[in-house]
Length: 318
Image 1 (cartoon, rainbow, N blue to C red):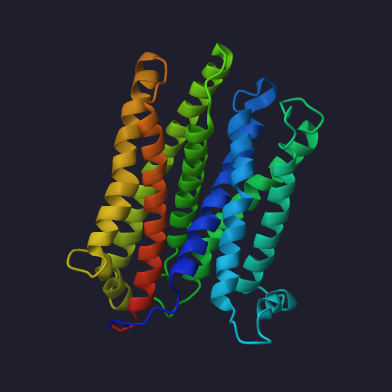
Image 2 (cartoon, helix red, strand yellow):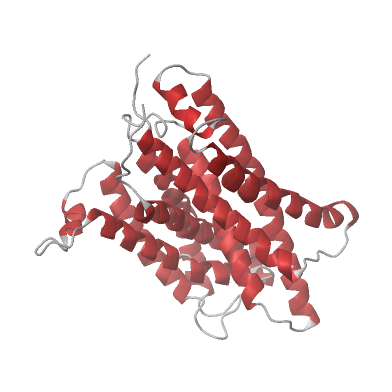
């Protein structure tokens, strides 16, 4: 049985996508910074990720408040009630988690603001201390976007233990894609040493992203199999994205083909010469832009399909 009206529409879908992307960018930035060591080969990746992270999360939170609020006089600020009730509900935990995320990510980004920011500068120690906090914080927000939906047993499409892992992997992949896109647009050619660091950073991001896409594809398959091999409401719910379902074409074209398969094939083609023959990693500028854009579109459409499918399907019993 299917419903017609969608209670959660574009603002919530955008929030889930933007929060996941920002969380992925922060976790990527902090982990790369901690990995880079004193040489600072990947310092610029960390810097781009740090600047990106708080922006989409803040925009996403505004969209969520807009969706939860109302424009009736006297009720404009009723979202503040989320801070007045402290319990173990997903909404309460998420409110405080997102608040801490925005605050910490802004502080972390501030350590990269000086024009002469570099490994070993006076901000190095606080930057690294914040990075240790940012990694679990970013992962926590990414997982939360899936838990928020999975905590609703009345929606069989969402009520899966695999959804949180799927959103985590997608968030990390879209976070990396955001960094790659900013990197491709804003990078300017420099001296040979800078170009070497640029290529090494590009290889790291591309190789990491293809691994995440592979894991995301596997988890997505498990998500479908878990639902399809059950009976009753869950099996009925998953049918909306399978052959003949109302969301099937959207899911297979935008999420699977554009968001996963095409970027994976391109990225594999790019990293194999370096991986197998130790050749210089090179990427044409058009691919530098296309790959992250495809991943970002796929990540957004994944949330669109999941949120929509969860609302047009209901429990039907055995």
